[in-house]
Length: 167
Image 1 (cartoon, one colour):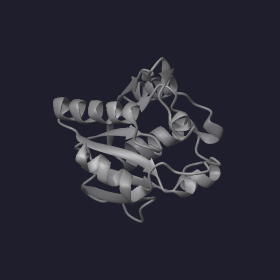
Image 2 (tube, rainbow, N blue to C red):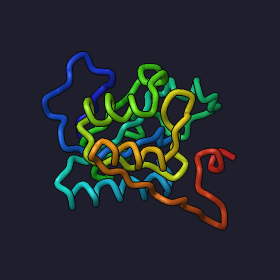
Image 3 (tube, helix red, strand yellow):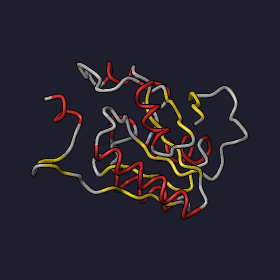
Image 4 (cartoon, rainbow, N blue to C red):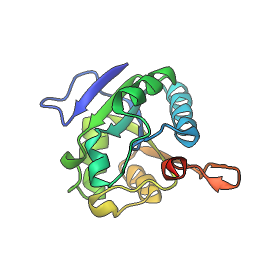
């Protein structure tokens, strides 16, 4: 598995025709694993490279997360074991001021070569987390690309989340 730090000084030539799962993936819990399994499945069906875009640990500071369930090294090992071929390890500060449409066009499509983006139902993006998973679908479609959203995953009658796992 190749780990690529973003922003990169110059786009590597090997980034094209990708499917990208988006998220912080703290815990890489059952819901996250479902998303990554869908990513790998859809990548193989469409002839795309299965990739994950996640964030460096400094995101936990901005999100005021008290304790990480997994550090970056642990997350990377899990991603690799699930069949991910590339990970875009992203500095949140480098994209936090982008609008949702700028993120889609400049980061996902132009830099990561995304033909397909995947996220969980509660994914937020764009400046101030102004856009939702449904916005991801419509913005990708408007760009001639595709996006899929994994529905809420639950266990024991409650949604699976890193917050719930911490509790």
